[in-house]
Length: 82
Image 1: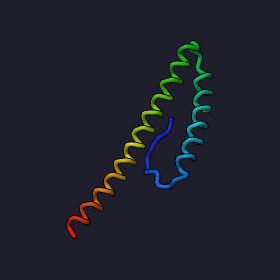
Image 2 (image 1 turned 90 degrees about the vertical axis):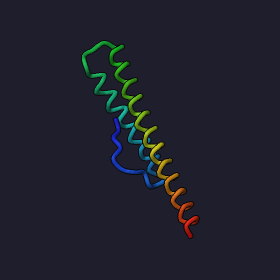
Image 3 (image 1 turned 45 degrees about the horizontal axis):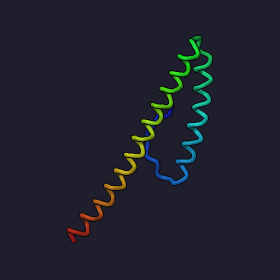
Image 4 (image 1 turned 45 degrees about the vertical axis):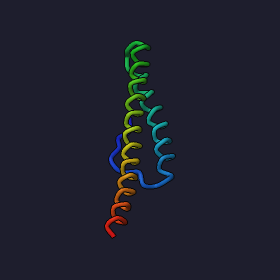
């Protein structure tokens, strides 16, 4: 599972995040496989892990778009006051 603590400011950072996610998936998959539970419980755990990751990614993308909109609005108000 990935944790978002700071903003993505570089263009290439998205690709790096995708690589890290792929690595964390395989690592987490291995941990889940080692747990002594039924195969269906392991599959459910994997699905929940991916769902949580998708939600976190969606929130980060929304935050990025909001920051972009904030910048546009700030520039608009600066031009109106001049």
